[in-house]
Length: 110
Length: 154
Image (cartoon, rainbow over all chains, first blue to last red; front, top):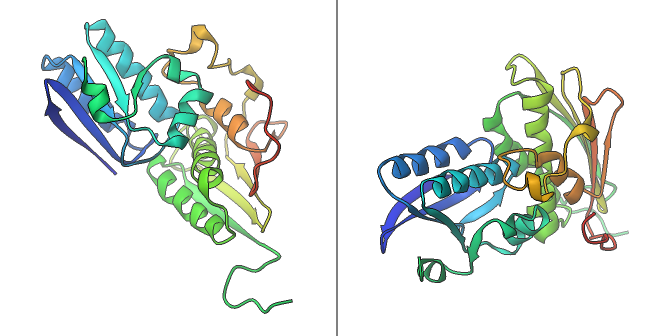
């Protein structure tokens, strides 16, 4: 599992390869916080290659979103498969995040 | 009855696993169990969402809240796997806790909390969830076929 960071149209894009779970969530958190501290404000996390997310993974997304908002930025999510969508719906976190079907859709109007 | 040609025993199997309280082993443990379930034709969302997430939550809870992340303490899994369902008992070596004291993470005032969704997910994703009186063992059952859909919000 790993996190790959790139920049597209002024947006920091993080690809989550594998699982986002209690064992690796700190790595994602640190990567995003480093970028935030470096002045970045627009973030997109792409779940195209993500197997599953556990409650710790969801928690880190919520915490990051809050921190980014406090700095005047925004965190968007894209490419959730059907199971991940269900997870966000069950936890009602689909109401908290801007979730796009594709990376391009998420980047549009950012 | 057709002979069993190297596939899983049709009547099912039972085994025990012991894990250290190390969060890094959760992914491998859940992956191993998912492979065993796949041999019994568990697949799709039942395997990849309900089982994987529910199991990962139960292991994380046992390690963090049960065993207090004490590397000397272990988590014991008793697994019974058959063609229709899997049952897993997750024992930790902690003093236990009251699972009913955990607030509902889907209430509007709790939505932006960074934690507190683990037990909710276990209860939502597994078909049966029972804690022992002490609160240091949880019994989980997941059936291969989706049961009748539960009412929305339960």
